[in-house]
Image 1: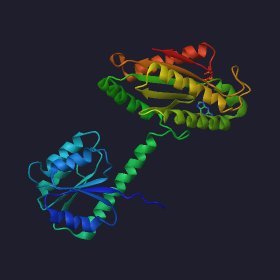
Image 2: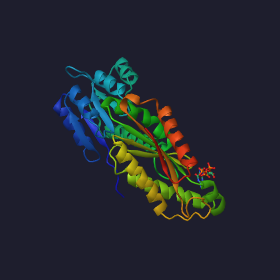
Image 3: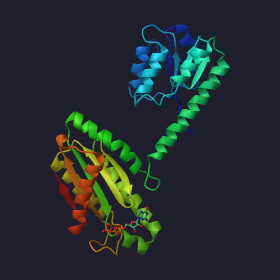
Image 4: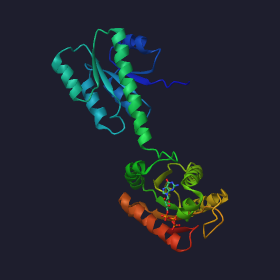
Length: 303
Ligand SMILES: Nc1nc2c(ncn2[C@@H]2O[C@H](COP(=O)(O)OP(=O)(O)OP(=O)(O)O)[C@@H](O)[C@H]2O)c(=O)[nH]1
């Protein structure tokens, strides 16, 4: 089995300390090093995955406490566990480190076996909490993002679109006559159908940079498509609607097609018209309602 190798950032202004820690940990982890607080913040904020930081306290310009404070204040770095590694063995110093959000405190001189165990414990906790977080964002049936993820992510996407002055398109999708499908083919077949639909939607969303698809509820899906022009997004959603029918999932109890079809409501927003997440979703939902009323298996666009 391919075991994930965690990445540890060692921060110390004294090269010999980095060397000693590297010797202890190099066989089990990917290592990165920084010889100043500034460099540590730069590496941790770069977007590269860091699973643990071993942080010296006494360093020139920015000390370890400040580094810790700054990393804990930022959304993209506050989940990286920090272990202070220091010669400061006063209880007050240790307490100060924990109060800043550190998960452990190792006192120099190092005892290699103890360093290994303490690092292993924290890395193991970090990997478990990452996994839990990931699972909490994924819909168990279709394996695409769930509503919880969309609710957390959409406000950030709206902010970003406003900042970058980009358009944003939202598509609310609903399966046509799905109750009839379930009632006649059974809930199990209904589940298989939702899985196939999610795969199809994902295939199209993967073609668009920054786009995402989420299962919004039972048989409802949402596509978030930043940056696209009106003609591009309409053409894409039309293709998706046709692709779903082409899956040829038999639906003898639908009134629009012998196969499973979807209706879609598209709402396109200009950056200066972007509203709260719940409002932009409500507008896409209105467009979807219109698509249903117009006869289903079609797209209605509000822009
Ligand atoms: N198999 C399965 N069915 C689900 C799931 N979640 C919701 N549903 C079903 O989806 C159906 C939705 O039915 P309705 O809201 O009446 O909509 P519809 O029959 O598709 O009618 P229109 O939307 O008007 O075309 C219900 O039968 C739900 O039980 C799920 O996870 N699996």
